[in-house]
Length: 523
Image 1 (cartoon, rainbow, N blue to C red):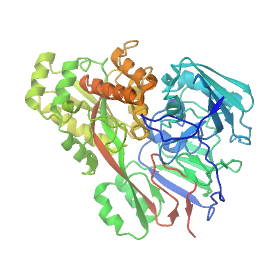
Image 2 (cartoon, rainbow, N blue to C red; image 1 turned 135 degrees about the vertical axis):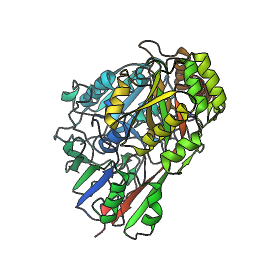
Image 3 (tube, rainbow, N blue to C red; image 1 turned 180 degrees about the horizontal axis):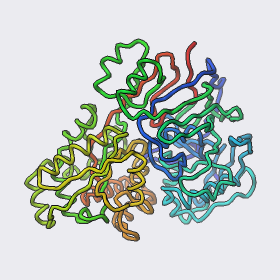
Image 4 (cartoon, one colour; image 1 turned 120 degrees about the vertical axis):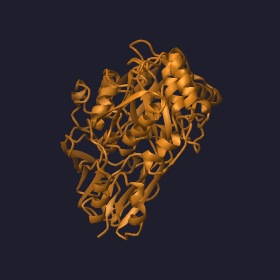
């Protein structure tokens, strides 16, 4: 076996093993105790991380669960529950050695049998189980070793495995047959579940049996050396922006996920509050069902695409805190491409009406499925509806809560045509993580069963398997162009998220998901 080392993740990078050797004393909580109450903007449909790709689930679940591999602060692949891994010379076998002394929240020691069972369950219910297309199988030859066998070399496999978009979290083997969305919430992380009140709150407490990763000195990304400094953390569901602002000002909330742009000038003057901005938080987007009529008609989808004014939509969605953005990566990323830009922000009512005529549109309703938990999604839908009405389309809003909207879209229930969401974590993780959304078995554009677009599948396979990074990048550009030309998605633009904490909260750093470890109150 050949040991490999870490290099930065990117579509053009090789994906190698972390050593992460520590040389100084690891992090120690400057103070311990207290309850940190965090105002989350959206309801949670489940804490079953493999079966839910919602941001609201990830915010909480990734403080409870851990994975074999994860990403560091700079989006490099690093080991987490794996102590190390090796790749065979023929690149067909990955052998993971597990960290010792790790325990689940029920006190049970973690072994390779639990890892194997977690992979088995993910292969049945995991939303991104398509990553296993090129996997021949896995095995646990002894209690501390887990082996993955590939059908053919895949240079991007570790990138996929380390993604925390919909990660393969490690659970006790006895829960491997839990149905989707009904997982026993028992992980290995610094925080364990106390209470989950749907629509109300999720309460976590410090897991005193937690085993930090001593290969590191500090938290990094969702890995590294993690410590729970608070006694308890409460994720309180506060869907109304004004209530989040008020709670932060009074101290009822010590942190909030999202602050409206119009409140920032006032909050910046408050010495008791620290503003924590995060540019390029997500790509605001609408996704069609191409099986539900009339959006099964490409010409109709092109009419809608041609009608949209993205500045107007994004201004309403974000109170002006946005950037126009072509496609599915941000301009600061190495994989960014503006291929397909001719389909973006067309703003041409005459062209839209011509497409409508060619489509044979007969005033059928176009149902925009949205929610009020995320104000940006709701406002984007409102403006899009008005723009569609302006070209003669009968546009109706279907407004439900966030978990319900996700459930309707995921099951592709009848009665909707566009689903409003944001691609946040996935674009930050790289092109593969985002384009995974358009692949079987859960392609977001909702093709009929067995009717996934062969051109999309070919581009995806090339993104994963071509040996030359330049060819993989070209495959990504080809896939983006196909998605935009066939209107499998309507990306509106990039939103900037602004979080906030009380000034006595230390160690809180903006990231794709709120991290509650290595954060503490000053005394």
